[in-house]
Length: 457
Ligand code: 9MR
Image 1 (cartoon, rainbow, N blue to C red):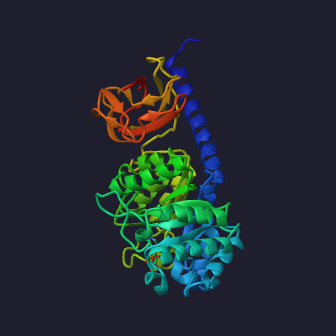
Image 2: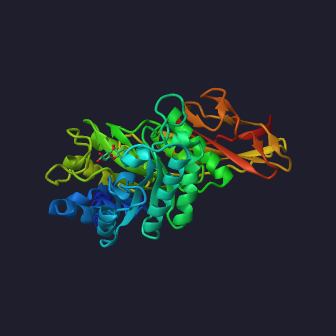
Image 3: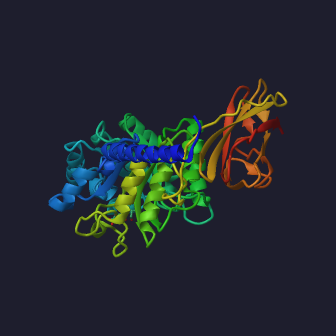
């Protein structure tokens, strides 16, 4: 058919009408599928959305209504801690812990137990103990409390906040630490024996980005996994101001790559960028398959431990804040995006592409799994030994022009653009014949076509 100006204009009209009709249909579909609560929206992504609650507030109907409507996971803010559950040595009190547990279970929610051992909120009698007496009292506490809640909690924060702030990357000094460096693994083993069905987590703050403290935790988790110490998850508390760190998603990813789940366990965000910050946290978790859920540390601003900072999703009267809407929208959008990116204009996808193992020198092969979005990516590189063991390895990647590495883990690198070489670090140079190890990095730009090659070093 000859394309006349008349037929063009008619076609345009038809197209516009079609687009309008389609648009309307899409809107209706989206509205029908979008969940209207945090727990419901998170469930559509296979995750939970939880809140820390206080037994003393369960008589407040505004509070309970929001709790029952919005959240699918519950943490006792204080009621399952050592001072609450074992006020006198060997005498256990589960009254308030059970109130929180039953409120959750009776309303179809799950429970994250918090926390079996911590240097704070110890009963006075434990604060006065040391050495082997404290060790056995601590392990008995783990055993008794985890046994009481056996089969009823989804996860336990077995140990809370055991690493030091600052650049050391080491353990925090505490009475528990002074019983010997193995106190954490002893606690995890006791918890597993007492409740084999609960996921066992290590939980900490200021471990949200890649830093010395989170790397200390990372090294401990890697060590536990390599020695068979039972650990299933890592909690990033995420008490934040304005935004998560830029490498938040990469940090979540590197823990996930160790073979543990990651949970955002105590989220609250102060500051004027709060709504965007909550969206960025939510999207980062959604971008990592093993990030299994998010818990906010309180319901209304007036319930928060951060008095005057208003860091939560509901105001003091129980009204939904802008931060609430931004979390709900991020959950309903599903998929992934770049933390801190502009949710209004960024179209995002998660793709996992694995390049075929390179034929290499026969010593080793390298393959890459990519989690990419518009403008950035996290690459996880698997280094596999051939028929001989490796005692060191070197991987070379070719980054497309315009691409820059912004952070990396489990390897040392030669640069951040162009051809980058990656060498093993002290703990992952030895790879058994037929075995493998992984390192990873985050970058801006495109992660396509990295074509890693591997050689023994
Ligand atoms: O929110 C809790 C507050 O009510 C307690 O007074 C405080 C005691 O130290 O603990 C708060 O919860 C903490 C959590 O158990 C561990 N991470 C930090 C939390 C905020 O301080």
